[in-house]
Image 1: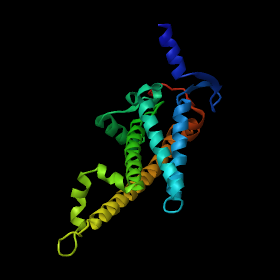
Image 2: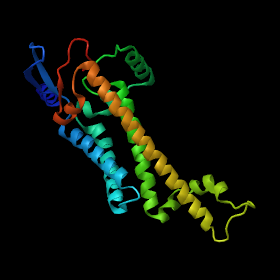
Image 3: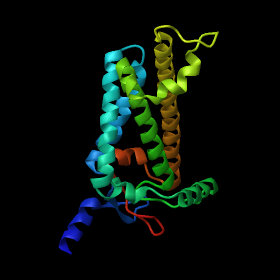
Length: 233
């Protein structure tokens, strides 16, 4: 029993502080240091990769590997990390997620101490799209790695044929076409990530306004306003 209490105190440590309205309130530690380092590290790594694309290839590749490493860490930490870092704490099924999105449209969504269902959906979308971007970039870094995907040439072969429907004698056209298809997939995924990031920032701004708390600052300090009646902790 004592160990359970200690674990709960580790996941959420309260700090007595006055609320803006003057009434006594408190803050609760939600985001642990590793979650915060992951979040801002991922922001920096993706921004670096985006800004150095086609300009500083060595820096671009290092940033891409950093993104991949951070994603791998988050997947592990989502299983063994603290309460609010775990996927089981914030991932919801389609029903609750759609219900929450409907409440958002009506301006009646409840406040979540951790990730709300919309935020959880965004996390999954970002992790998947970033993983795809990093993986296609890794394949592009060494042409020989394309052989690891035996299905790719079969999918792309129609685009490699010449006007008479025949392939080049050495197969170089197929290989070049495969690289072009991979580059296009990499670019599409990167643009998708950028779109998701814009939606994510918009969601953060909206939630901060609706619930009267600075979520960006909370990801820096780790603390959020203690749950009020009706909030979901």
